[in-house]
Every structure is written in C-alpha cells, then in structure tokens.
Image (cartoon, rainbow, N blue to C red; front, side):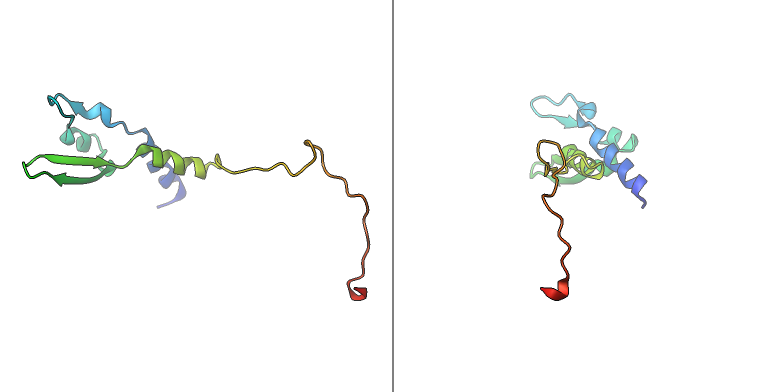
Length: 103
C-alpha cells in the first residue's frame, strides 16, 4: 500500500459519519449495518460484540484519530520555536578562527 492510498483511506475514515446510518430504534440508537457494508464502509467497523440478550454492540474506528494522523502527515502539528531576536536574525558578535590543534 503506497502513501497516497494510506492518505486516501485515512481521509475516508475521517469523513465517515455513522450518523448517516442510524435508524429508528426506540430508546437506543440502531445502526443499519447492511447499508454501512453495502456502501463500502465495512472497514470502519472496529468490532461487534453481542449482549446476553442477543443484541449487537457495533464499535467504529474514531474519526478524530484519523484526522490527527492526517494532520501529522501534512505537518500541521509541528512545534516551531522562534530562536531569533524578535524575528530578526541573531548577528554574532565576533567570528573567531580557532586552530583545533592549538586547543
């Protein structure tokens, strides 16, 4: 898998909105899992656990983690420190020619 495909897949995960697949379920949220898979979003499912009563708990990969990784790829979170004096370059006071053999 190349860099472009990795970035594309991360972007797809970041854009995925499980809210588009919620359907009427009374007091609990019900995900239309068949539609999620039919629309090609099965890779966003992190896991499925079953309750003692036979219900399914579906966990999806968090989109905020994908956004964080994409931000790192694009260099958005680099810490930058200004090591100059007010934006101006620091001018050395003296330049010495030192012979290392004489030290």
